[in-house]
Amino acid sequence: MKRIEVKLALPVVAPLLDVVKEMADGLRGSLAAPLGLTDLDAEFSAAWTDELLAAQKVDLQALLGLFGDEFFAEGVVAFDGENAEPIVRATAALRLRLRERFLGGLGDEALESGNVELDQLPEPTRKAFMCYLFLATIQELIIQHLDSSILGT
Image (tube, rainbow, N blue to C red; front, side, top):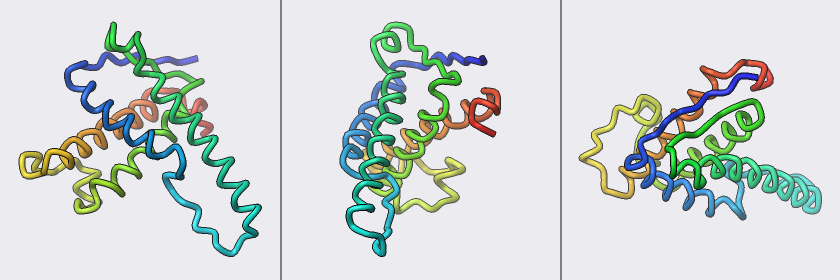
């Protein structure tokens, strides 16, 4: 099974992890992409939401688990068949939350291209944007470098 290891610069990544943890904490009780299914039975909708929240929590734990003591000692994160899918889902959830909370004023083109004047952004928006790009990079690494069978395609 394929595995990739990436060495990250701790001084760059550590401040972004504060944003990641804050956003992950904010997702404990709410879905990154709310269902919006108002025509369903309330009990069914609640059960479905609870199941999705539990899965989202597991995915976020997989992502946060990359940044434990070993990461802070060596600066290395590893992606493989066991953590690829949960991490892609977790990074997507966090990017949705960042977009909703901090990056709504930036257009889709700017968000996806990264073509933003960072020095023109207020500090919280700048940090959120850098975190958004960091999470996008993680997604791209997984998708480009791991065997497609890991991602179920």
